[in-house]
Image 1 (cartoon, helix red, strand yellow):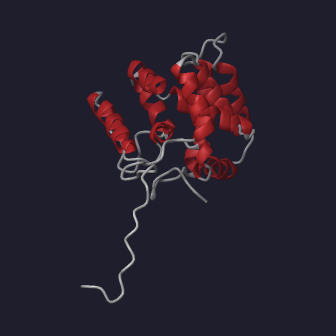
Image 2 (tube, rainbow, N blue to C red):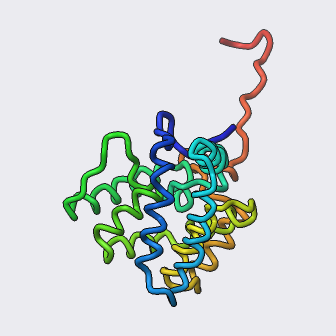
Image 3 (spheres, rainbow, N blue to C red):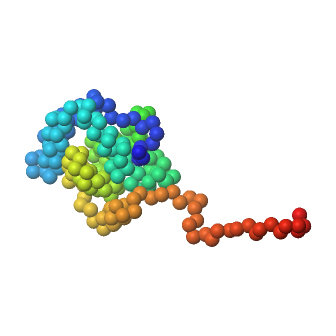
Length: 206
């Protein structure tokens, strides 16, 4: 089954998934009760705390690693599997480095969990990065909602903290939903007429 993650990308372990519910609940409890992002985050933690860690880890892999429409790598929505995606990854790494933040060797900079962790350490820059990928985040939120995934609650919470979709972002979501992420076009000319070699002349000069 196709995956949006590059080969060798590590998958979440059971201990990691076991830690998420209390961490998410702590974050939710720190939010002001009137903030719109708090209720959906608490709904996710309620589900996660009632689910065995192994089952939660399996659901995570089935949702995010095996379905392209639920890809957690944000540059995928902007660039697909084109060469420009590499540039997007490099820019993220440079942004992290400029803030004195270093990634582990097995981490990709555009994974949503990594971007959120950075945003917690550097809220202003993190908010800018998330806003730049607003269209992809919205498409991910819609895909998770359509699938009835509990992870949709996390995206609902995140979406409530970002600017409302408008103008170019709204058009980008509609375009992504209709056409999918970009595809590599380098070296391809779909409008070129085919060129055929003439048939050899039998018995003619060589």
